[in-house]
Amino acid sequence: NSRGELVFNTSNFSGSAQFSQLALTVQDTPLAAVEPLSIIFDRTKVDFVNAKFAGGGSNMTISGTVARTNDATNNLSVDGRISLNLLNLATVDTFFAGNADVAVRYIGPYDTARLSGTAYTENASVAAFIGTDRLTLERIKTRVVFTADQAEIEDATGFLGGGRFNATGGALLNGLSVSNFRLSLNGDNVTVPLPQDFLTTGDARLEITGIRDMQKDSLQITIGGRVYAKRSLYSKDID
Image (cartoon, rainbow, N blue to C red):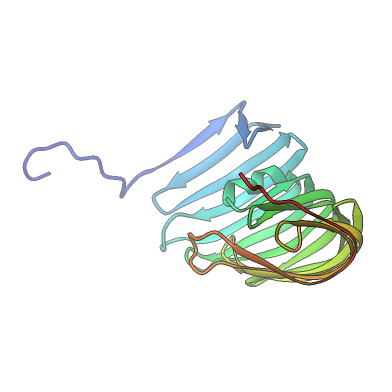
């Protein structure tokens, strides 16, 4: 600078990276490039020229541009099978497992890019906490359609507490983050931690909703509806 001091400035930062081999472990999920990987980058964006990964249930291709500033536009595509464990990087309040076949695009300006495409699961699971109790949906089979800032869940089926359920619903997205969601679930002979301090088995007609007031906040999940109880167990820590 004008005072003769050495200053590092990234305003003209650019370059490229080529990897003949690359192996990563993300969320305990191994990923390895299946062929040489090429990335071009500058101050405003990162271009994935050739990125194909496999491992841990994933077999996917990533291509296109990820914007890093308002001066660039996102145009990224992800195709193939991905391990849903990777989604746990983006959330602290919901836990995913299994695999999904995806064909999605992330397109638009840096601040307002939108997700479009589809994701299909055969044997996925999702878990979330209701208060101190964990609610887990298992063996989920569904198709999710992404359009603009929404995700629509089409006729999901699976198991909840040993009983079979079917569900429909949707979510409002803020970029890649879920702002709120609603799920209508009908289950037969399911076991759920409802009401508080009870573990109830029966036929359920439930509405599960979640809302995030601020982008950095956790999703606040609530559950309502009816459970036609066949049996119910009450437990309480009295220490």
